[in-house]
Structure formats: C-alpha cells, structure tokens
Amino acid sequence: MTANSEEFNVEEFKNSLISKAIEDPTYKERLLSDTKAVVEEELGTNLPEDLTIQAVQQSQKRLYLLLPVKIDDEVHDEILSDEELDAVAGGYTKKIWKGIGQATVRISKAL
Image (cartoon, rainbow, N blue to C red; front, side):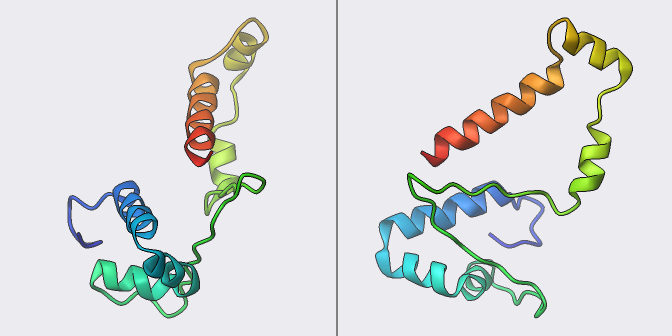
C-alpha cells in the first residue's frame, strides 16, 4: 500500500498500523517512539522533513480529540442556516445526527 496509489485509504492504513502494534510489542514501541520512520517504511517513501507525525496511546482515563487542519473553514462550512436552525429548535437535522453518530462511533471504538 502506498500513498500514491489510487486505492490508498487513510483509515485502512491507520488500522493496519494499529493491528501491527497490537500484535507486536516491539513494533508498538517503535511506532510510539519514532512514528515518522515507521510510517515512511510502511509507505515505502520519504515524507517531507518539516512534517511531524506522532503516535500516542489512549488510556481508559485519557482520550484524544483530533481537530482538522482547517477547523475554522470547516466550522464556517457547517454553520446552520436559519432554516436548519429552525429545524433544530423543533427537532433535529441530519447534519447533527450524522455528527453525533460519528462521534459516538469514534469514542466507542476508543474504549
């Protein structure tokens, strides 16, 4: 699997790294201590020098929330229109339930 492949899927790649870390404690320690090198090896390519990649391990008492790179743009794009706001006041919108569902799935997978 390479990043240049049309079939490259970030989620599958992350899951592959996690699976290997679960199966191999040495791999896990290396992934935590030298994440970028491990990712470069898995991708078969060198990543930009100014790119930092960090793997962290969650615990039952510590969860991490990753914000998107351009959160301000994303927030602006997701601002509710007056019509959507009216719908929320009287019920719900699909956007809200979709967001809640995605957050619930991510949290439940982390636990």
